Image (cartoon, rainbow, N blue to C red):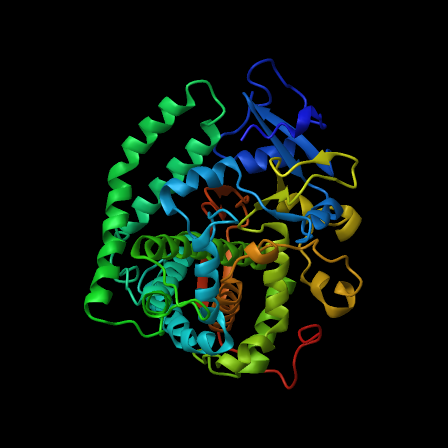
Length: 477
């Protein structure tokens, strides 16, 4: 974990001090944004020292693309992901590359994200969106966007993953699983940030002890769901849990044990719902700040869905909302809600920067910096512009410079689920409502495992769609 890169030095932010390194003045509640600010001019690669730990970061798009070469590089586990293993074990997100359960689970779960499987999930997504709208319309005043999107994605994923309803739309208080999950994630994040400090082991044990009751609750709840399904011999493949319980590996017949099934469910719940809810929340923020873009999205929904504000897109219609998909792509360019991934070389090599890198070395690719590299995205890289993703402007763009779902064989296995759900939710919301935000609101971003707008509210009013005679200009390219 020392990650010393054989003593090689990299540029670093100003203010380094003996012993503590680069941590003086760091905003511990927003470490990613703080790093982005302090290292804004240090592309393509820089370092930060946190006591005894060396962190190497990649911020240049071309160097990041180089590290996406699967023949030369593989996923590495940063201290934060190592700490998260306390919570989710050897699930898909936190497993080591050579762990047997990663390969087994990855092969077993691929059928859960085929086109046929996505067609099965589509009605569940629509039902959950309808329940969110009913909840919003039963209350007065603006809606808390992040809270609503979190309820939506948690319910959608839990119902699709293991046919469980958390009661998010019927109960005032969140299901106990939610605060327990947040507490466990925060504990893992703190342990990961402390591991280089003197006495880190003692602090980590105290944090684990303090969080133990949350971990025990989550583990027992999920183990109970798994046991009930096994007892009922309910192992059909309508959801991820049934697939894991009833399916063996297509070549070896090997199955996941119940402990790893728990780890996989927890991984999907944690990583899946947080990333999607963040993407939706950021997209709504940008739409509320760009009336011209908002008008184009609503024109697209009206052209495809017609005059009925309650119209629900069919599964086949979702890919037709190309402009809304571009809004989502541009949102994930600026604020990829899973904002980083770690890479290590498969064998010793020399980077294009001239630095030597060994398999025990790792570098963290910071996506919000990579996605803002002016060499790829232009001098206006900080500006929100969905038309960056038209076919014309995308043609010729270097490969591997846009990676909101990670890269290679360890990229997010559920990305098609997330994209389908996100486009579907935005279509229904934009077709049904006019939205407006507080003009004085300034974007604040909270950081846990993922990124999320903080304190962002919208006023929603029912709208009357105005179906166009044809698809709006710019919405179909």
